[in-house]
Amino acid sequence: MIEEPYRWVEAVANRREYIETQLAHGSPIAAVGYSQGIVFITLGRTRQKLFEIYDRIAMGAIGHPGDIERLRMAVIELASTEGFTRSAADVSLRRLAYYSLSPVLKAAFEQIYGAPYLARMLFAEIGDTPENDLFLRLEYDGAIATNGASLAETQKNFGALSGTRASTELMESFLKREHKSAATLRDALKTALDAWTVGNMALAEDGARELPAKEAIASERDKIAGGIEAAILDRDAKTAIRYRSLTGEEIRSLTTR
Image (tube, rainbow, N blue to C red; front, side, top):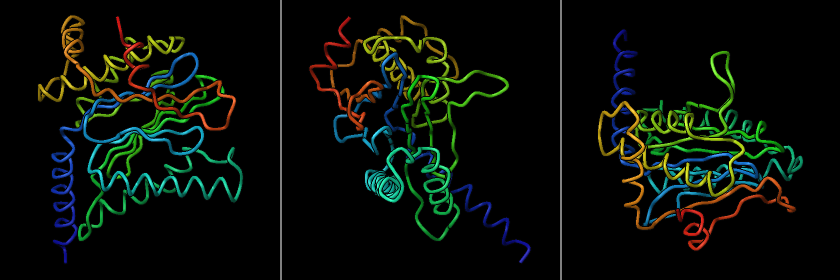
């Protein structure tokens, strides 16, 4: 009996290693606040990675398509139920993540006789002002990271997600250095694309711990031939639904230097 807890810990460690390996090559996702909203960007030619969740909430995800779809449908159903039984204004990303999605992911991860979710998710909820925007990253084990301010640092108006933790951290370091909350959509989109480039370079150079030089980032970014997916949450939208996918033509015009 004494050995049982240790076997569980070992099984969980093996499960974590397996999931990390499966997610290691996921294309990065950057979400960046700007003067009139929030812009999401990623690259991928095979399937959609950015989604509307509910009115003011959007999501980007990497991982197994089936697991992403299950989680996406679950959070949409939760948000729709909350909006119907209460009101649309009561639908909160914090409530959805902390009281619904996170417990489900944690339980699936720790139940070693069942299949875990192979997915990482990045959410954003647009507020009335940039200071009220919420960026939230949700891991496969239910762990949550937000852009909330702490005693050590001020609130960040961006979010990042990648296949490895090291890649994600480098993206965040880049955005912390380069991002400006008062930027235009064009500037925010370019910054987000550079952040994606940083994350992708880190994935290609396994073990990278330092930000590449600006010239190297520009060189890699210029190699991008297409496949950019982008969407915005519009702060000043006249309708309740703030989410809109950017067309290929819009992306090309905004990223042309």
